[in-house]
Length: 311
Ligand code: NDP
Ligand code: OXD
Image (tube, rainbow, N blue to C red):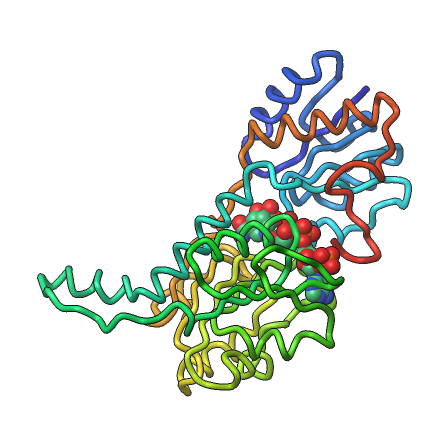
């Protein structure tokens, strides 16, 4: 069995780890003209990589999002498999809870006060006044929704198909969207980027937050293109939105002159909310390759991507 590896950073470390898990396999970093492989482990490969792998059965993505991979022409006989959690959901839960609590408890204001040696209290704010809406109730969204609920915030969730998550008021589909937005003040995006979800956070939808009252807050940890940047900036300026924590951007790295960097109501992190953990991911991917080589159907693998659906 031959496995090709392609990724921008530390491909050798992935080859070494995969080789340890799959000692009988022939595993190498891909170079143009290399013999075709049976499986590939990748992040954002070029089209040439796919074109030179006509016999590829499994294309294993070392991230949870496959929007970049689905831009490529992949033969229908190649199955795309994404990471299924692999240590990311707990990181995402930490990140979102931190951003939420920092905003609601005004910890940013206390930090600024502390820098000036100022001892002063903010008026307590009630968590019932900050219902959280999580868009996407998949592997990451469900964990985040449950974690937020642990801090006694009211939690709403929105997905494509109807879901039931304990402690979460669930909405689904286009029909449930307006009600979901109106019931939520802090909006967390954990959707995959698909033609249906691109630009989902825009002037019209953001104005529906919090029953149309001011004070909405955005936490985007999915993909930059879910958010219409100009609409966010305008709504922060005009008043309806209170702020945003953004981890993902249409152009990454975020250009140095981008207004988000220095905006007083925006907190920026560099796509760091949930990092791929190499060792955990290698174990997961190697386990899946072992399973299909032993006769398991790709359809039974957690994280199999449906290219029609886009995630
Ligand atoms: P999943 O595929 O497990 O979950 C996706 C969720 O989104 C599902 O609940 C799905 O609904 C819902 N959904 C999809 N399309 C729509 C739609 N049109 N309307 C409403 N709901 C929709 O994905 P993960 O939870 O594993 O990951 C989510 C995303 O997080 C990734 O695609 C990636 O872009 C991003 N990500 C970001 C990271 C970062 O560091 N910033 C790290 C890892 C991931 P249904 O349940 O009905 O299928
Ligand atoms: C992912 C990511 O999709 O890192 O896993 O964004």
